[in-house]
Image (cartoon, one colour):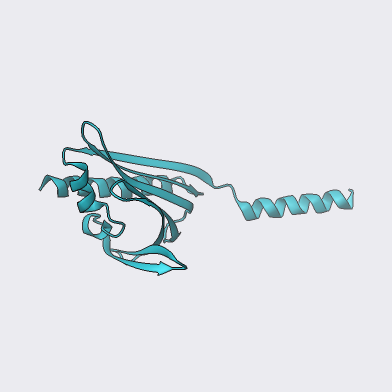
Length: 156
């Protein structure tokens, strides 16, 4: 066999092993509430309010790392997420990406937003790569638990 062809095949195999074949996922969950948009944002819209309403998050602290705002989330089971805020529209939305987490995913970016039409809609949408399809269900469960807790909070 041609030595150049063997070398090319070896490089291709190594590149394939390094890159992996992770699937791309998009998860979006929404909740409609009767509360005014500003009331909703004031209760759940701040980047570090998540520990006030998400049942899996016991603590949120803010840090500035390399000039960017990060939140460090401590979960009730002791796990920790570090998330970097990458965009914000005050009163409307924030977008963030996961810097580190115990979840088996990569390239996670999500937006938490509040819009108003006939009712107020809260939307949590994320995109990420993962090798395990169960990760999509995990993210959906995180969003659903959070939105359910918000619904209960606003009903009070």
